[in-house]
Length: 255
Image 1 (spheres, rainbow, N blue to C red):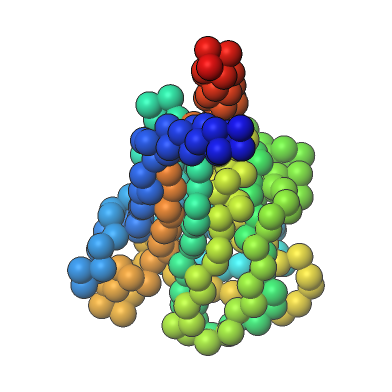
Image 2: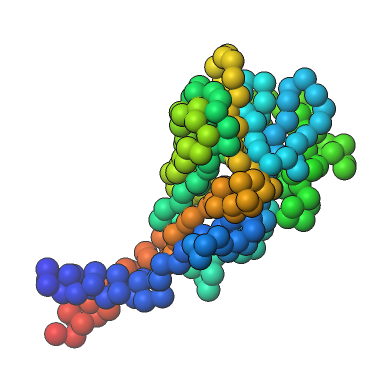
């Protein structure tokens, strides 16, 4: 009986994994540089100041400190990497966000958090110019969740902390696997925000998706790498297991 149950388990796992194949993405606005294999996918990113109803969506860098927030997202994420494919659900295996400091500056701890208020409302590339400290959608006049941008617009669940070196050119590779899983698990994509909650002086500057600096080095821009696969949902796995056990019982009765 134990051997038979083991056989059923092997069959179920084999059926479940029959169509599973790991896939990868490597995205950066502007595409590859020096043959590094990145695909050109538009990134919406912007930073805004708490004292001004304006934005810096076309700036070559993102400035972040307790009074300046930067937001970043991929409007076409669910279109390019859908949550389901062929009746299978996505499983995020790993995801990283690569950033580069653009100037010498702050060394205050910075957090990457998941935004919970919609702002990726237009075509890719248009949203970064459509937000500011008071409005998530300038065109429609829509404010953030509590009026001005605040902690009501993001969640700190699975936030990623990193400490800037304060040295131009420093590269940070952030593990955002849990954050990307949260986006898919919640079926809601509003990207991320960079926040510095602690008071302090200095500004963290990161190259933005519009960076055209040091001879147009595209590899200075933010880059998203992700590995994922499509797998049967738990309910399907249960049905496969029940079917396999049922088959085993019928065989035993016939014997």
